[in-house]
Amino acid sequence: MRIFNFSAGPAVLPEPVLQQAAAEMLDWRGSGMSVMEMSHRGKEFISIADKAESSLRTLLAIPPEYKVLFLQGGAIGENAIVPMNLLQGRTTADFVNTGEWSKKSIKEARKYCTVHIAASSEDKDFTYVPDQSAWKLSPDPAYVHVCTNETIAGLEYQWTPDTGNIPLVADMSSNILSRPVDVAKYGVIYGGAQKNMGPAGLTLVIVRADLLDRALPITPSAFHWKEQSAADSMFNTPPTYAVYIAGLVFEWLLAQGGLAVIEQKNIEKSTLLYDYLDHSSFYRSSVRREDRSRMNVTFRLADEAQDEAFLKGAVQRGMVQLKGHRAVGGIRASIYNAMPLEGVRRLVEYMREFEARHG
Image (cartoon, rainbow, N blue to C red; front, side, top):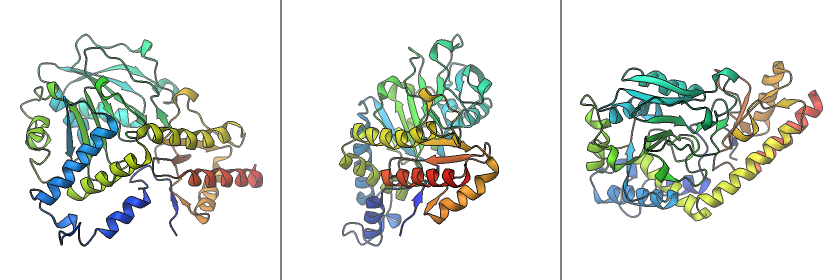
């Protein structure tokens, strides 16, 4: 029996995707090979990669002037790759600091440029997203960087920033494909796959084509977006199996009815959990209501000495990976696209039971 896996990543995958991958493990559609054995130059894998890109473009309604890259290195790798690809001719990049993942991006970018903090919510322990009216951009930044969902704090942008002619760069690792996105409002969208797209190892980059000529001369060829774009993401051997699984996830999302349908399901799941938190004095969520993440619901028990008992009881009821990030503690329920409503219902039922016994 499968458990309910609330891990922040690598995270739960749709069961139909896992079942299809298992069925095709030894022989992908009559090829006599596993996808893991295929040449990335062969017609079989090229068809897999082409289908994955086509499905993703349909899901996100990606405009034709944007390039889709399937790369490696994760979002942390992109923290260096982004400035290397966008800084030519400028020396400053602006960042909005909303938590631990924003801080990692800022730390890495400082190796390549002057970082200007346009806004920050560190003054209140990253419990809110700064209103854009409070942002103070630098005079001529190469780009403005945001992290649209902070998995550790449980914080999410419920709106799209407007940076005018300055390219908006977004780390969407943990909420991409959870809702429709107006890609045209961004210069670059990037993210690791291991939340809502597939297994760890694949990094997605969506970049507007006119930004491909801004790379610093020191940019490694394997991480040079223009070179990878020209090579259809195959300048070097791509993470082939991760691309294959991501493609299956994209097809599964389309079969659900697309991102507008998925968004409604995510709203239903997160509302169920937040409604219970808001009516309980035993649990508390510190994130400002309008900035709460639909993907990562963070909360604390009134008596944090009971955390271990809470987590142990959850495991006994088939729910795992609910422990908060080591940097902040507490409890974290990651309820990505593949988490069924039934899993959230079981969690709420258990929370109610635990409160009745220990509250």
